[in-house]
Length: 218
Length: 218
Image (cartoon, rainbow over all chains, first blue to last red; front, side):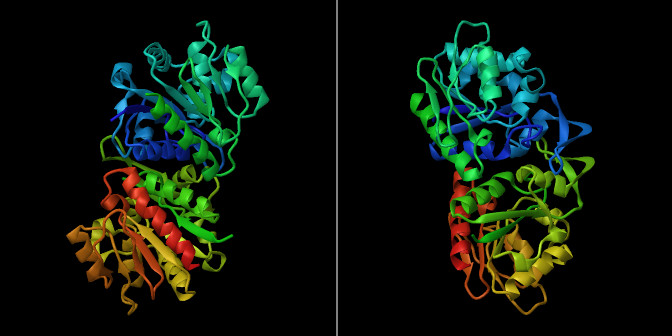
């Protein structure tokens, strides 16, 4: 059974992983008779009240919050090795741009968590497919920055974000919510999800295609 | 477009709403071209660390946590009226048994939040369908306690929980994860979801059938 790493960044669109994207990813993986290995880094996030979008001033554990989506079955990122996985998938949400990287604050000057960069580069070096949705394709652009590799990815249609990713060295392809963008040589599949989608069914259409394509590539 | 109330109890299987069940419900509603009106009571829950299952000693707002699943678009339960809805659906998770009621602690002596009881009884009186999954069918049993109405419901196969529901006056039907139990005269549809399911795809099979049946009944 193929094993797909699903890398989370918390639990909630504004301070962690986008919940719908994460759950639809898990459902698609299970329906394709594959196994999800859910993981997240052991770090803190800045809590946002999802009723208002405002910071509360409190912090939460990214790993403990991600464990909510995982129903308790979660592996700390530091224990996850590329050699044990057949593919990785990154759901979106601001956590990808605030926890796994600081893209939301620093744009093209952003840093990415070293463990996330290492995992992406190790999967790529092993010829294993990498999927990302919503804003999470930015992690792929950040991981390959200054590498000489120029991954083709999509975050949908937002010209400012697309320009940031191109500054990092990626090639941006415009796409709608039901589209997937496949970078064949680099074995990377991306879809805009809630960067473009206006409903969960729209987001799910692209996410299900992404998961199927990733598993087909394994 | 039919409007279905989706009543949440937090965000996480051990102290709130089961996230997979809630998201699969929202996806099924959207795919059926219906509208989800997501709501939760404005009260506190006892936080559980989902890595360990242990109480942390802290509390969280049920409404703020549920807003994570709702991507911020949530209506406080006190503002929701049965007259504005065509149906209601209750996802499961311990929040149904610890926040919306105290079934987890008091069994057949449990109380239900008065606002939840009122909503269930008002929907029933108006002939509007009511859906519930996982442990949430217990809310239906609690709402109809001492009413003279004996709803037929399922929580799967657990004999102790089933006996508790029968003590409350409900009729329990054993069911597997892909089954739905339909109480035609009372317009109630239930499915065991994660009370029985061992994977998200198994849970989703019953939840999708439940949502389709509820919408067909409207």
